[in-house]
Image (tube, rainbow, N blue to C red):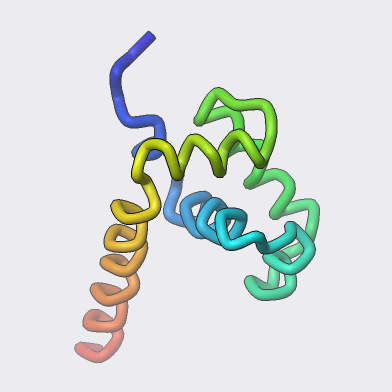
Amino acid sequence: MHKEDPFAQLTPREQQVLLALMRGTSALEISKESYVSLPTVRSQIRSILLKLHVSSQLAAVALAYRSGWPAKATAAARAPAIEGDRLAVGL
């Protein structure tokens, strides 16, 4: 078993989905808010569960809170958007 941070394996989109789950947002609400299909969101959730080695959304959320992940993720999730905005303005 490796000692790498399992949250580092999540894609930016998976991080967004996990943060939404942590806020109590349902998969249906996530799909509507992000303009993707419900099956796509469910696929993203399955990927999160596999990468975090947990069997439920509740376990994924609990693991994230126990590891202090929301504080780390909030800063990381904002950085690409800010950088992307800078790039878009420069065009």
